[in-house]
Image (tube, rainbow, N blue to C red; front, side):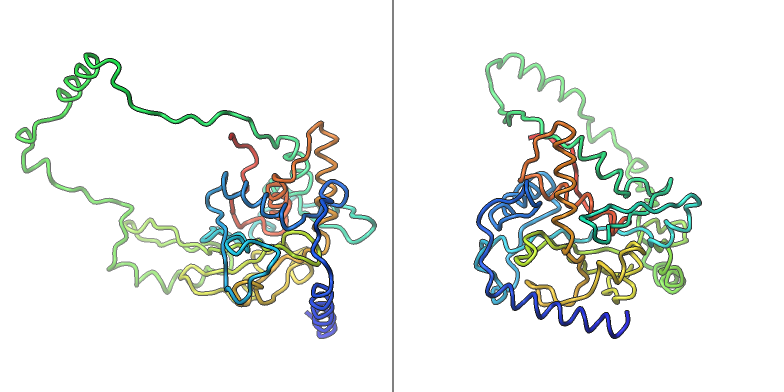
Length: 334
């Protein structure tokens, strides 16, 4: 990143913070017209996400950093220990038939999505195709209860179950020998492999090479979603760990960002609720892209729902971070 670009970003951040202080919070829904959210709609969408994808949870964060337009216990969304098995460079190197497709967003620079046989789950065409399948099947929630309407049948079942239970007297000493579990981590062999694994951390996930150690070591990310008052959209934050649970450096995080977005739509800043340095995906075009996806839903005969906003949002964010495997399930039942 050049010094000029860094200076421009610093000036822009200062401008945004100043405007946020004097700009009233959005209170009227503009979801269908502009692809943005009110704080209340952000909470509504977050509630649906945490309900159906329980890896996501609401967080309160640092009380001194709380914002008044969100509930104290719902300041931002968080999912922890999200695996990232390979570097984006590996995906790109494996593809021989790459091409780039640009999403035209109101005449501005579009979101670039890499298209190939190995990464077609992440391209923009896949995003717009998948949103046509977004649905919630309304099914009443049922609770299973135990009754005793047929005591005779229950007694018979218990007798059958008792017959299936083996007598402990039938067990001999030779039946109690435990076999070695191939998935068990051998402490004696772990240290010998830790040094050799570091050499491959740049390109692919580290794995141990001994027979008795089948534990997969991988980079992981804590991903959070905050509400951006200025842009009136969600903002995604990334905090990464290497295979040894040590925080990733900024240049290492960019290895897991699409090359077309690294240092452009992804930069480093202080997390607004945690106060730690994290990477974030700049929300300047989130509203325009979301408007495009909402319109696509309408064209496909679907009624866009504001509470499903984050499912669509996380789908298109996967274009930027294609190898970070967070949960954004599109099809689910209620």
